[in-house]
Length: 469
Image (tube, rainbow, N blue to C red; front, top):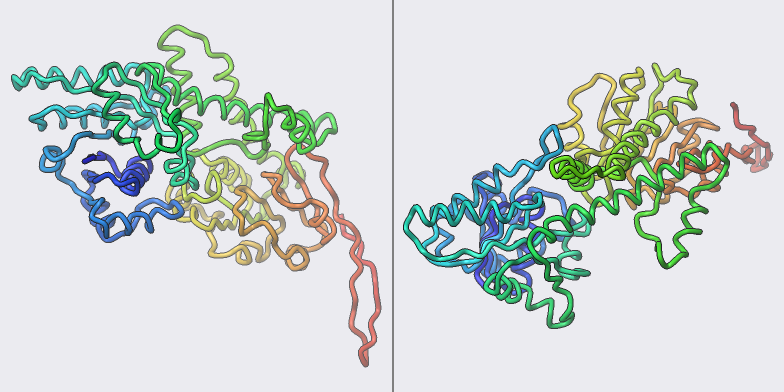
């Protein structure tokens, strides 16, 4: 099928490239000329593992091209996806200005029927709004055909988006008529050959709400575990043991049950806020959503307080090494990342922060701005120079097995390691002579280390080094 994808942000680019991989002929359109030129050269403006390889393959097969001319391209396609941004306003409401602008451009350009599919995350009733814009414009142009408008929300996890698209658990589609259903069935035919029941057919309003509901449910699990972690810290439990205990219940399962520094990114914070706004708009009190949002804000500040408390509030002049700035591994996305709150708290208290992230350093610096007490580094080793503590904020795989003995020599014995994702093996950290502090877990002070000092003529003398308080 010939498809036009309007918007080459995260959702639009991944969706367009993956649809081309499935055998469709796809045009990805964007008004940003610089971005389109970059894409034509095979360079992705977003970091997503595997995206450039799929782009290159699709372009070589003439299944994928990039354009800035919607008017020129739309006449050759059978379906148009709207995949533009819906940024939140101050009240949490999704801003539909870009969605409505694309709907208007489509209506002013088309000369024959096609199907419009809303891929952007939009509030309840947005497809009806898009349909109204298109049909009223067509009427003004004296064109008397119907354009089906379908809701097809995305469920892509940053860092794993390609697999999520090509190997989906389900594909949610909200449509009101047979023509729209037939078009979406044809687009997703490559998926139904192996899984005939993978398409979940809903009405449009239910499909729009499903996207928010899914993300809000996952955010709720995260906030619940973070609150339990704080209870464990006060009552003496271990949140990792609690997690294993409740995850063994098949009614609960293991996913999204890890305590940490709080959720972030472009989806969970935005969608929780949008759902709260919808509740207010329709006069429905969503107390759980309000609590989820508040708990997440508390958790980010709590993580800063863990660091501050260890130093008895005397952070001025301390140097804190931070590993990880993006809101999760395998992405450069730092929007709403807990690191923004924690780093701000540290520098405001007078601490110096040296941070490294494999992909998110540049993005973080652009959002956080220049500060004399903040520096992005090019390696983990650089962050540790003259540091008084190490803090992990993002569980990138390259951080999994550091040389703790070397780190202890650099930081000094009994220096604190704040593992704000419960990522490290705390016994290993402690055995190296460092003080392990996690989330919702009993801290583990440094263990005495036996070192071997070289003497004359190859002789050695073993001595025990007691960590200093």
